Structures are given as structure tokens and as C-alpha cells.
Length: 221
Image (tube, rainbow, N blue to C red; front, side, top):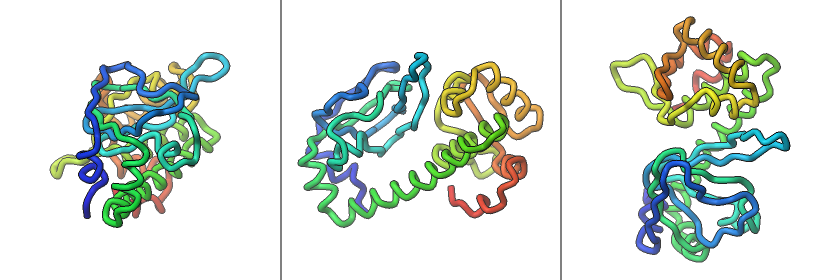
């Protein structure tokens, strides 16, 4: 199966962003689409009280802003910011349509990626709908493990391949940094997570027992 990355690369221009740089502003009319080659980008909004709320993360192979590329919107719905140093490929909407949307193999590959994103988004919404703060954080960690986690063969823990600070997790669930920190410390004492700085590891089996959702055990990571 040919990836969209391989199809669009010959028609793209490389561009790099330093950590913290803006890729798109909310309301901006993009001139080109972006595919992440290396690094991490996040989308976010700013509340009326000035707080940032992270919407999603974009890693290698992800395409943005997809709603603009598909013609659903005329501008960027969110802010996009480089979480790490980022390398991208940038391309026109016309080339995206010609070399990805009209190519059966590239389109099927993108569909598989979007299917994973859709499942991850449902897990994320499920977390936000929880009434208790502890469950909001736990379900959000499960979403992060599903979408961005990797596991070594000899390790019972999944590593979340995104640098996560407490305020970033707090912004994902809409809680204060202080409340989020207390919950993370509790989960650490339970042996469900390990973290050092911005590096997080999660025991998926223990987290599933904690949130009590047996149906999620069949979700393929």
C-alpha cells in the first residue's frame, strides 16, 4: 500500500519549524497543506479566559489542516504549534487532490490512518464525558496510549511518544494543573504510570482495570 507521503513528496517543498513556532493561526486561510515528516505539532484553541486547550497532536505522516484540504472549511479552525522541532512537506491543495485523493492506494492508506484517528477521537470524547476528574485523566491517558503509544517486546509499559508536561495534560482534559498533578501522582503510586519530566509510560493492562472498560481490551494499538 503506497502512503500519501510517498505520493506527495515529489510535489512538495520542505519546511522546518523550531519548537514553539506557529504553523497556522486560528482563522488563517492556508496557502499550502502540511505533512509532518518528523517531530510533533499540536492543535489548540484559547478560551475566553485566556487558557489554552489542546485539541490533538500530529506526528510523522499526519496531514493538516485536513478540513481545508478537503474543502470543508476556508480557513484554519485551530492554532497549530510545533511541540518539538519539526520538519514538514508542504504542498498545494491541487496536488493533494491529484496525487492523494485520486490515487486509490494512497487514498486507502489515508483511510486506514483516519480510521485510527476516528477511534482515538471517540476514546478522547469518552474521557471528556466522565464526571469525575480522576476518570477524565485516566481515559485521556488511555487515548494517548492508543494513538501515540509504543511498546518494546520486553516491557509491560507503553511509552507515550509525545513530551507531556502537567499543564499540557491539564489542557487536554480541562482541569487545573494542580488537580491534574494530584491525579497523576495517585496513578503513579498505584503503579499504573511512570513519568520523569515530560516522559510518560503507562501499563495498559492496569489502566484498563482502573477505568473498568473491558470492551477496550480488543482495541488494536
